[in-house]
Image (cartoon, rainbow, N blue to C red):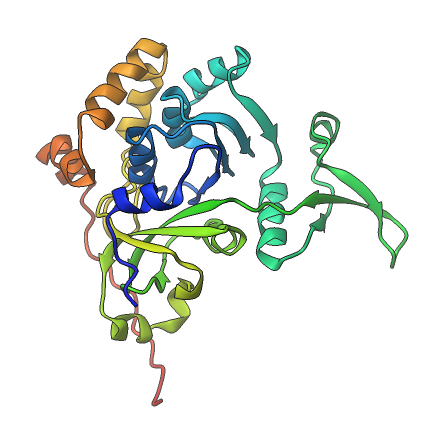
Length: 300
């Protein structure tokens, strides 16, 4: 049965006040359009979990959507601090729970595997153990040495952006792979946003590229350009100029609110957002075709 619906419908159905949300994607395939739709719908008291909060969670926090952020590195990638989000944390308006990257992925892997926790080697982040009581130490029953363990992470909703999927939710991703698969399998519900909806035989023609299977997907949303200012490999480039611009925008709550008013609240959907960016930005982010070498799967 087709799971196609609009992004508005998916957020309305599956994201509720007080939920824990995981918007996946490590520098690549960040679902900004979904974050903007959550802001427009006025969700509140969300726990936002993500390896790198990036601009998407700063915007959501500034809009009043979040009460807590679970993360591993908080910053404007390649630029500096998330100024507005940092101020909210320092003012006590946002609670934080910090991990290393490896610890966050280990938490997701435990959740995806149906395990209560998983062990991990020490990462040198000893101060995190002092600051975060979710880091525990247990004795390895085989070697007798102490190992660090972290609890499973079970988001209420994971939002995954992918290059393409069929209407049932079999999604294919290429380029940098982040924690998309782990987040999807760990979550109670999965909203999938994609650049393209393709026929079933396209997905079947390259099965090893299918990262997210339909059996865990609740909603499939066709949202071209969903990732901007992040990027989608093969579709559009990362908007590095915007990340630099955001460093200035985020200097004050007033300038952030001006951005939200102009680029989120006054825009109905991603199509209008992309048009508003204008032809100059669209051309600058366009990518040239660079095809992979075909794979011969043989007869089946």
